[in-house]
Length: 246
Ligand code: 9WO
Image (tube, rainbow, N blue to C red):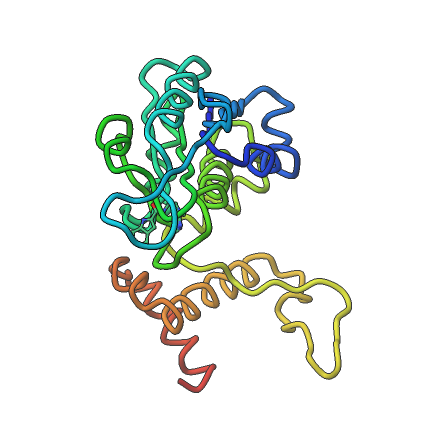
């Protein structure tokens, strides 16, 4: 999959491709990341990319022309039918189902805004979709763009190993993860649950699924109500609630 990001801080965005899962995917040629800086397309001597807002008020607005030229240049690095996505708290919420949809695309251009916002006419003429990570404000769209690249890359065939993919699949059915433990067995009187030391793999799988259901129910009831639990799941959840005294 071909990603291109339009940003005034390309060296920040480049970091996502220099570490971890995304870094390996780039090394293995599964993803590419092109960067375009609107500043390189500003044609005045000061290479101006922002200007004062019409109507007055504090802050600056990202100018149309340098960003538009940077998006057009980004198109050269991605497949022809790659959409342009802008990261903004005004967008629809990015979740795993959106990540799955984007992972089917041949490419994606991500526009990361700065300042108080982007000239609305750029959104109108160049942006296909606005996406938000949630109801908070960042200083720019870069970190959100990096999150989208990471979440989408993990879904591409061959990026995760078999074991990691299996873990991802089992928790993509709409539940939170179960708790995890590693050595040592006891920390200041906090012990690893005995079942995890039992060697009984069926019982361990059952316990993990019960924990995932239970903490999803307690922390994210919205996720659980979407699921329509079957008899077996309802039994596990009832057990969890009885054991946890809730
Ligand atoms: C900021 C904003 C605040 C309230 C309502 C709508 C808004 N849109 C923007 C916006 O597009 N801002 C640009 C990108 C320029 C300023 C910094 N930007 C930004 C993106 N801040 N926060 C985000 C963001 C992106 C994705 N998910 C959460 C926040």
